[in-house]
Amino acid sequence: MHKGSKIYVAGHAGLVGSAIVRNLSKLGFTNLLFRTRKELDLLNHNTVTDFFETEKPEYVILAAAKVGGIMANNTYRADFIYENLQIQNNVIHAAYKVGVKKLLFLGSSCIYPKNAPQPLKENYLLSEELEFTNEPYAIAKIAGIKMCESYNLQYGTNFISVMPTNLYGPNDNYNLETSHVLPALIRKMHLGKLLMTGDWDGIRKDFSLRPVENVDGDSTKELIVEILNKYGISLVDNVVNIELWGSGLPKREFLHADDMAAACLYIIDQIDFDDVSKELDEVRNTHINIGCGEDLTIEELAQTIKKIVGFNGNLKWDSSKPDGTMRKLMDVSKLSKLGWKASITLEKGISDVYNQYSHH
Image 1 (cartoon, rainbow, N blue to C red):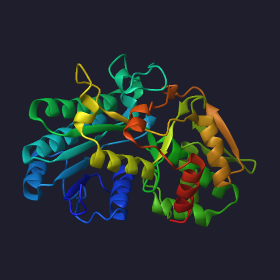
Image 2: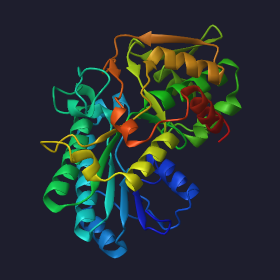
Image 3: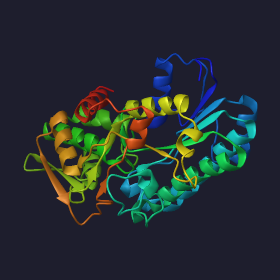
């Protein structure tokens, strides 16, 4: 890519997309193309086709997706499979039709089987059954990988799929109903700290910025307390207890969004489909894992966040709730051989994210 290349980032406002746009801008790319959801409905085939035919981007980064944590994935199963399939089908096909030079499709580590060996290698894809709670989302992402591979084989396109591990960073989703574990822990402990110190101005400010089930900063104290209790944040005898799902024993890997963005830009600039397929007898599983190669238990993550946030209450684990897959560590040896490695440590990344959260 050169600095004037026309680059369309689908999903530019989310955690992933905004990190990519931020990194592109820092590197001096000036011809960036993006649309809000209101401006371009990626679920609509005709509007996506018209957009591509009009703008004719040279490069496409497909970061748009319907995403959420274990509760959201298990509750809105139909929405997750339908919307993600629609977005992928529309964007990838339109990119082929207008002759996009290269497309980067972002998937998720949940594509791998529930009981796959650790760490997760790319060739474990479709070797066993998926984790039930996020199966619809995973199937949609697998379809995206196979769509890119198939278009490359049939049409000679240069579409590459990458599978990031669990991500966090600026512009994360802190909705208590749909957020992933790391941002959910940050917000719960931030609210728990405010509740324990009686800082109702701070609590109201947080709810004004991020309403929960239509409860905002102008709601009554009783209604806010009711919502806090619903999401496991309660004040008992002047001590705040935060209830967390599961046993705390599952292990997860976390990568800062800026590291992920740096890897994506390295791949779209330096790596072609031939680089990941030329040595294969059967061209399959050509996607590339993106991660740091290290993991920790959810309990260790919670204790790390507790320390950074300064929450002095209690954490209580509800083992009656599902844990999900017990471990999901990405094997990043392929990416390492291709020349890229993560650089932001977890503690530094969480500290930066919480500093931004608590001051914005």
